[in-house]
Length: 223
Image (cartoon, rainbow, N blue to C red; front, side):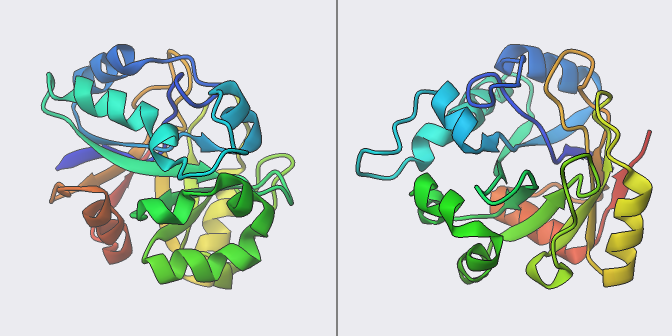
């Protein structure tokens, strides 16, 4: 069985991330993980932190994926696969959404994406073929989005500094027949390798990873 991390942040883009590529890879290799999906925060605070200017023309996706690229380069030493992901926050609320299997054009204009709000973003991500999973929907200041706008729910968020009320997330996912994921929500030393999924197959890339989640052919890594 292959261990795959679904929810992880780097210090390069996420202002709350403390860990760089070397520390992350050492920890996940020691824990026996075969793959990591980098889901750096895609919100205004983190774009400011990373000094990505949203007022200039041109796609910002490559700038946003700096953490992914640095981990991917470091991962070659360990034989671990790294997938592109993002944790979106729209201006309308404090909810967070994990995005998997997206094409770069979808996130090219962060200002427009963040202003759009979830309801307007739904048609865009579905037209792109991406997969959207709401992270920790019952954490303080968060609320579950309408199930019809989502593909899945993170039913196990294992970050130790937050009460994500995972029991309520599981109930919501089951009641609405949504995809269910587990993730470490790794930011700091000690957060690493707490969650994720176990799969008989190891996806080749980010799109295959999203397809694995759609298939349901995996089990959740639990505490």
